[in-house]
Image (cartoon, rainbow over all chains, first blue to last red; front, side):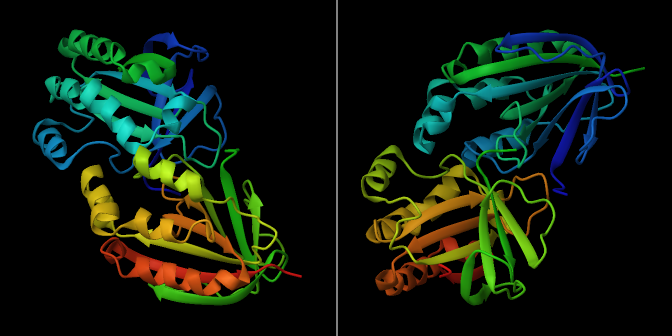
Length: 186
Length: 186
């Protein structure tokens, strides 16, 4: 099994409690009460499970060395004790996006959309882990799963972050997006 | 199943006949007599099979729009009637390579190693399909599987192509490479 693989199980079992599931664009995902986040593959939906999403963390696709150093200097890892709030945002981009060349995607990602620059404003308050799904062997519903966590006090800042990204040119290539807000189960 | 997934089954069953398996660097792969190339996933090694390699075709990672237009103008698809010779070259790159940022990898790939420029010289004689393995859910032995095909008359040109690439700075990051030469089974 790929050690960078994570599974996200939506259902009524264990894991984070779902506060809301908003369909930003495209088809909705079935409503669930809990999302369990586990390292590794879950091939069968467990009892109480409704759906499974999977993704692998991978090498950076767009950031330059300068941008990466800025990110590393400010960013925090997931799982801080006060990070009681989280969001799982599955996204699929359009065929048009994937047909662009690297230089075209990079130009939209940063020079036109300021994806890194926007994200940097919210560090270290918002921690983030990006999972790639598009090149898994199974056909997946999404291209990316991004998991964020933050304190209750930073919830409004997280709303601002996603709102700013959704205004960008890059987001014109997003054809499906679900915004799942979570709180740590007590 | 991901429609871009291909499986390469090494064994003594059906498919292309193996002419040679050369270990260029790193651990060898077990010798086999045949390599069968099938669209889709093969989860169990079939009777007569020794190993399975899997990979997905994906979006371009490094080429610019200008380079892509040059490639498209010259390149041929796999499977031409006179393409009786083929090569399957599985490669794994080092941890150091994957820790580089996009701009660093691009600079090594093209500005320092001329990967596209070298490849262009051999088009349309050598056709090529690149499969990615690193972000599959299963742990794979390699990061990439490249399949080439060409006529018997172009076999020497193919030797020149791989020799030129192995001299580049990019290849200093290749820690495992197997060169499997094939001919179409009569």
